Length: 242
Image (cartoon, rainbow, N blue to C red):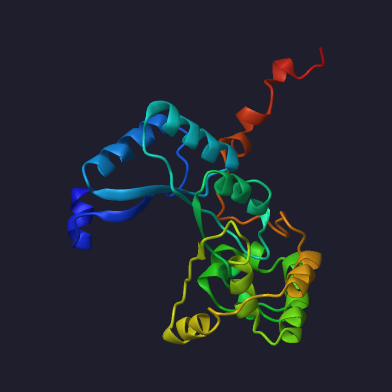
């Protein structure tokens, strides 16, 4: 921490986030270490990132039970194409008064209009590493419909997507990821865009609330309960019905 503060040329960090859950580390141990940093004045507030709803609840409960600092924010992935957090994560964060800073509101660039059905994919690192997701037919079909919704509303697809990301009352802010000044200027130009209920209803018809469509995000956090076959399959000796 001391080395990080020196590199940042500051004596404290306003908000310190855990990048992802650490299944091998008890959450009480994690919160204890973060609480020590806060008591030392090196960190002002702490938060989590890509935590499942159940782990957000557990962290809040452990903090209260043990008298430790609690997570004040959550940082999940969220976009028109990935609305899964609407089902539990956002309601849980609202219940605990947590701020929510969503990342990838443009779905890795798919909601910029550069990815179109029947057209060659852009030459980009995202296509290289997330090819299946970026070329998914279900997602591209949805994008074509969303482009029509944006045009009818007099908006670009980018502005539609960014405005959607902050329309949910549980979302505090959306993280921008421009690579050029031109992209930054375009994003800032859409800051004041507010979507009407009519537009939001049309989006709901294309991608229903609480759903993720198409190929699963390869960059998403996958809990051990899903990634480890040993946790979701009985031993062969126990396969026979009792």
